[in-house]
Amino acid sequence: MWRNVYWTLVAAVLAIMAHIGTLLFAPGYAFEQELDLLAKDIPTNKFFVLPQEAQLKIFPEYPAGAVFGMCRFDLSSGDVSLEANLPDTLWTLTVYTSAGKSIYTANDEQSGIDRFELKLMRAPSLLELFSSKADEDLITNSGWRVSSSDTRGFALFWVPSFDLAMRANLVETISKSSCAKISS
Image 1 (cartoon, rainbow, N blue to C red):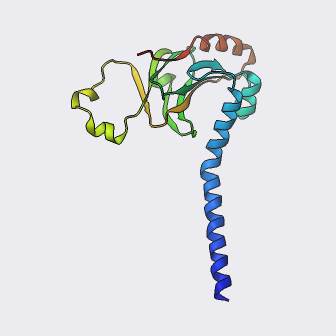
Image 2 (image 1 turned 120 degrees about the vertical axis):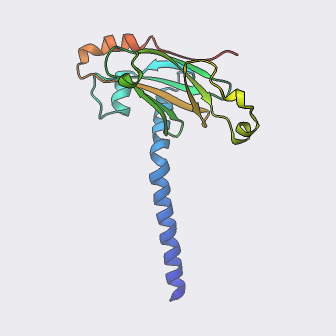
Image 3 (image 1 turned 90 degrees about the horizontal axis):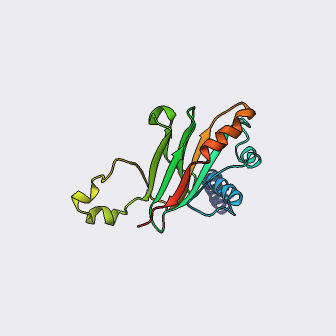
């Protein structure tokens, strides 16, 4: 009798752990897989605008006139510069890790400008933090910087629009953005 209760409890605990694991990790993994499938022909560290069909598939809850621009970045071989060219309207920039965790967000109200450069860099490890000199921690220039503990991720621009007729102009403006590895 107690043996059956024991194995029933073990099975219940394993089922709960599997359920929690699925809830925590599956959405980020599925989103990354969908974006990887979409951008399989686009190299990393290159900016592109999502085609409308793909946008409606990935973001069905957003209006069809909205524009999404994306940069898949890889910091394993160095820092990446994201030069944003955004329309003079509402917009949002969010930087995600490869698991879909948001690590940086900015919008038109916070930034105050529609053209800027964002430097994406690998966050130092704990050992690197302790071994660095105090003067190495100073910011050397006045640009925007985002550090990521994950070497891969993506930056996503969103420009909302309910008018499909405006989409072409928004795409033209945001297409002037760029994403490239910073040469050493």
